[in-house]
Length: 136
Image (cartoon, rainbow, N blue to C red; front, side):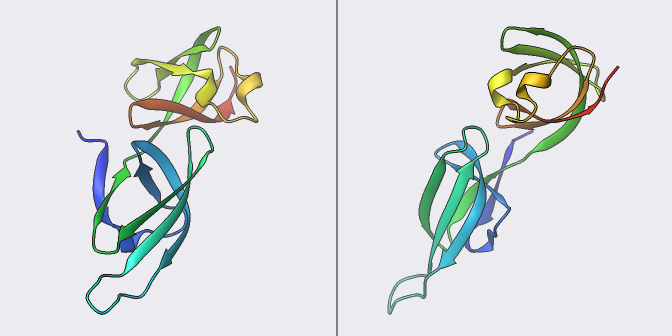
């Protein structure tokens, strides 16, 4: 299964997701310019990376397709933590999943421990831990 889909740049709205230089980002703002005499309308997209938090800006013709990441939202139980490596078990498939602590949300990064249930996103091959849903 492919983890991206294509969507017209003019269809993006604040809160949707986009791949900018291969990095998944959330759209913060879009501005559409008027088409010129022989040109097409342009869409200026301001986005923030969901991995690093850095700001990105891209300008595309409104009729062009842009890549949109597919985000799988799942729950898991933390099995062990060794350094920055977090080993988890997916609660649907019972597969072991390896995540990196640097991709956890900042407010829960230091409170992760074995036995906790967490909500995680799987996007472009990376695992992002979004929230703690329960403890053992």
